[in-house]
Length: 149
Image (cartoon, rainbow, N blue to C red):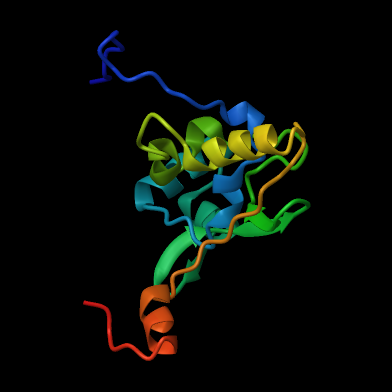
């Protein structure tokens, strides 16, 4: 059953249409479930096997969306429209995309707005990089300290 929208629900404080789609470009992997693939297959009118081969790939043991060249960030989700920076499969997008950012604020949007105000430039584009290395351990070892507690 769908949730009923009430005044008790938190107000959303970001506008995806004013963002260059950081979330569609930053993540190397957007994991997809069987249900996500079924949704994409139905959306495009193809079989699940065709959708799996055409729109996903294996990445370190998990099935993820394919990526494509991106004019702003190098690579992004293949379903990102390069001109509008909007999702071309919005109603068929994977569960992880539906749930993002799972809070009332988007940190990428907040940084974008902050930097545009600070730089007094509505076109400034802050760059982000997601990294999964253990920077704490590396930083402590460089300082001659032991491991992180």
